[in-house]
Image 1 (cartoon, rainbow, N blue to C red):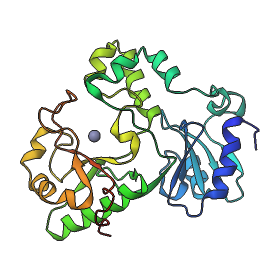
Image 2 (cartoon, rainbow, N blue to C red):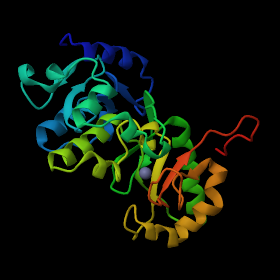
Image 3 (cartoon, helix red, strand yellow):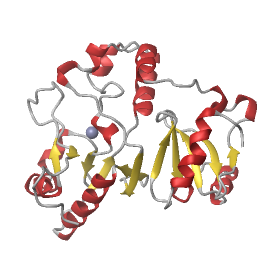
Image 4 (cartoon, rainbow, N blue to C red):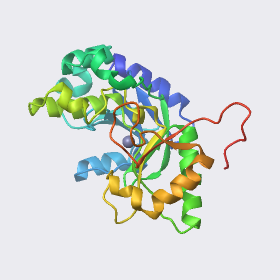
Length: 272
Ligand SMILES: [Zn+2]
């Protein structure tokens, strides 16, 4: 196993991994350790490597599959030869400030409208699949609440679909990096995308919700039976709409974006 700083914590995380269902975040959130059984590979070699592995190590920004890890914490590098492998080129300790500097974002841009920073959880739980069949990752309490809420809606004849759950700071940075390369200004980008570190999706508690036959993340969602159901019932499960019409953050109305909030002290526990 290569002796690299990012990988030292990997063995540590594996020892703590009691079950293959959580996803773990390593190296300041630049690496993700995902259960291999849930992941799909393009190409036969990757599929074979996944089928023999317990975990997949993935680049959080680009989604590139880096390595597989077996039950004995043995690492098998994917993609490139070891000398040019992304795991060897990773700068140590690249934090949020470094990312902002690279992208040309100032703190005043990021926090415009009173947005608050959102920290990433170190562990996320599988909360089912999204409408595209990808694993949906949420913070443990939000994952439990989403499963309960989706089941309750289903019993009322309302099929709810997750469109997007957890999104990492690194991935948010990559979205903005691509737009900057296309020549867009920071201001134009931040009018649509939160700055890395300031998206509620980083917390693992925010969820974009849709329903079959409805385009994702469109204002027309507010005219669906699913939205009416959410308005009447989501509060019981701890979910609240984050960006209503004329919200103080200056963010466009997002009827699809809901966030789970822990119950206030003394309140009744969440329904299971
Ligand atoms: Zn959202």
